[in-house]
Image 1: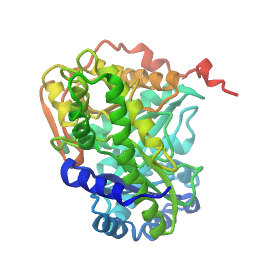
Image 2 (image 1 turned 135 degrees about the vertical axis):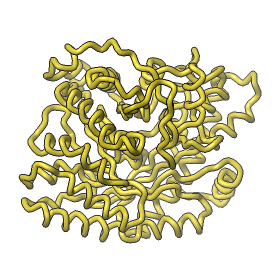
Image 3 (image 1 turned 180 degrees about the horizontal axis):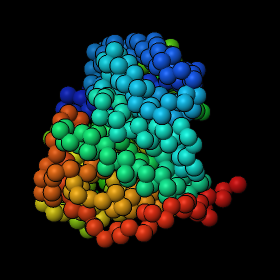
Image 4 (image 1 turned 180 degrees about the vertical axis):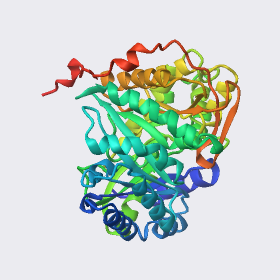
Length: 454
């Protein structure tokens, strides 16, 4: 599949006029050879493996950015879920491994490193529990490390014991980072049907089915998509809107495909996937909410929002899948409240509620993302929020997630300031009628009938 000079010229126009960037180049690195019963030796192996494998990641990305003129917003690394290698070690506190990951990220000059993670959708092993118990300390003592835990899947159902444990962990992580607007919880995400090749944080891991090292690329382009749709006449049908989205997604993804090939070739590692996700930023004009309003919704969150988002998500996938040899990751439209200026505006105006966001997650990528809730929200309420979102993912055979920030010391109407890509989070009201029984029943929500695919 050759990339033509005309496509390069079109891409340059997107960069100069419509704020196109490549959201991230993420190197996935296997740490399976680093397991050791001695914590000190394991930390040394982990640090050496990451820094040696990704030694040239940043300089290669910078060179590609300079040569092709396409900005690369983030350079990142994802690693094998740490709980898997920590099983060899008896230490109860696994946060020193997070400190090592943070040191490696600093050495490399990358912005985030994902993989302080565990997969517990069907049960929790000893290492999984030790890792989860270490998350609050790990995220409070590091700057670049991200954590994720998969508590549900369509094949296994929902591990309700893990749901409550993660709710309690989220609250404790927020409490441990109060002086930084509870930002530790902004680097922690709970998943159903977690993918093993996502380049996006905070949920990136390097799955066990991957090669030793791969390059995964996350494209974006909400600004490009919005600019393309503005050229449509007001009376254009939704079929016309879908076709324009497909056409634009194809062009955006071709840029990601080019950079993915070149990065993997120059770094001498396997080419992984291109993630088609439309990932917004707090910058003006880089908003998924704005796209939905251009499609025709009066304000994001109003009636028609879920329909418009479903159309956008589907058309992005249809257009992008033809432009890459390997599409993966999450691939769709993200709706993080704190990272999208349009979402923030809609929330502040009362158009967008937590309940509407939950409905929207049934048709988009990921789920309830970067949601700040009042600081007095109980762990049982957060567990109910997680369980609801996990059920959407399990029943609909899709990836869903919750990244919620208990705003300790803050109430509805206050704002958390994270800075950078994480943006600004308005504290949203949350339904407080969760009760205490459901979260404490424990056990496992059984796998649905549609999990029997064989």
